[in-house]
Image (cartoon, rainbow, N blue to C red; front, side, top):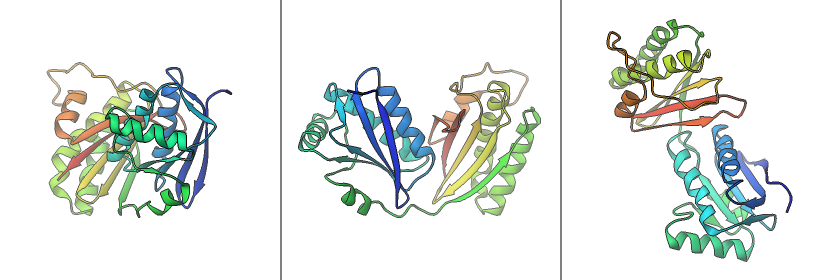
Length: 247
């Protein structure tokens, strides 16, 4: 079998991905990260077509689809769907689902047309974005930006937690990723997502708290104030660290 690859086409706003090659321990991460990158582009859905060009070394590796499905459900809020295009793939997906250790609750279809028909209209979102400098003043600028956006969007109940989380993520990007971060606020329904993009592929690390500094408690406080948070590779290099706040 040829080297593992992901072939993507865009159909009606959805990213249709056809993995080609053998899924095993050496290619698991490549498939996982490739699907996450597709989701970061925020299509209406990521639809994975499993055809004769795809082989799985053992059913346990099908858990990669449940992993991606869970990670993209909160942010960027993109549904993942599976299409088994052969009877063998359909049996493997069904068996994996019944065993409880594989594809789990990931929606499954027998054809691309059925999967596309099941894609729901994405919920309305409002987005505000700001480019920040590679300087410590970015923390102050982020706080002012968050307060202004929350006031303008009439979600002032988010302000305190949103300001704290945004400050930590932005200052992490400046101090540790040595980047000029991009801060994005996204309001969807009753949830506010704070996302910070930087130029380093390294995942965020917990900084040492500084007793004389009111902030600086890093991801501990982000985790405490957020419904959930995570980190994804950015398709054009670097990463996005995000956190979701409930009202």
